[in-house]
Image (cartoon, rainbow, N blue to C red; front, side, top):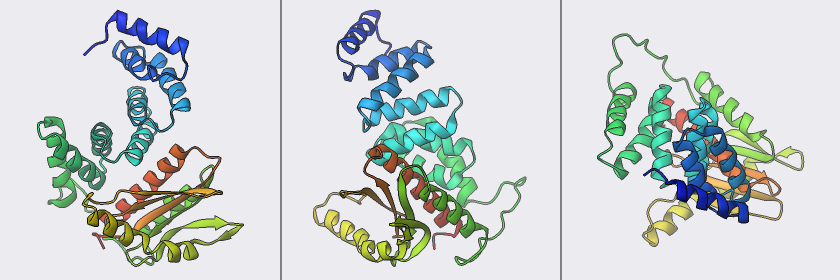
Length: 283
């Protein structure tokens, strides 16, 4: 529903009186609806500086970036929203449609399946999901070029792509390390720098039981599947998230880095791991 001029004025007055007010969000939405993208973008960014874990604000910022053709930034914001709240239906929908638009069929299927479960009446999601399924798991279209068979875990393009992506994430600003672990707790890719040394193998040994313990705990409490764990220490913030093959990703950031940034990098690491798993046929 379009905001009335009176509502816009009230939100503006509230924000002027208190820069930390959450009125920035409905005001930014109203500006976007009226075509004032730049004003909405500035409002959203300033609001997130004060409320970095506001899920709906990250979703809206993603929409604004998409409106401006900045698709990578848009997906980053939706990724943060899902890292903060995996059940956020609107961000899940946008991630699925964005992956569909660029032809990333496995990622599109993963997100769109969850989006459809949340709203079975969404025809756009239903149509995109059906086509993504055909591309990713059905027979290839007649004009498609068959993809080369995935190579072994110990070499080849599939593994090299994962190692490159996760290695780059491990060197992101403020990130101590990023690793992908398999279901047995062994390091598949990545590094974790502690005091100038790669301690990824030691980190893996410590974390190897975390996934099964988390799964056991939430099953005992009847809380559904676990989506992630956030661990804070005096020196770092560590995000753990499960992967579809029973493994997990672990990303650590310095304490002076915003938590949202660590969640964002962890979301990207998990997406890389899921692409790898899909390319390897789920092994």
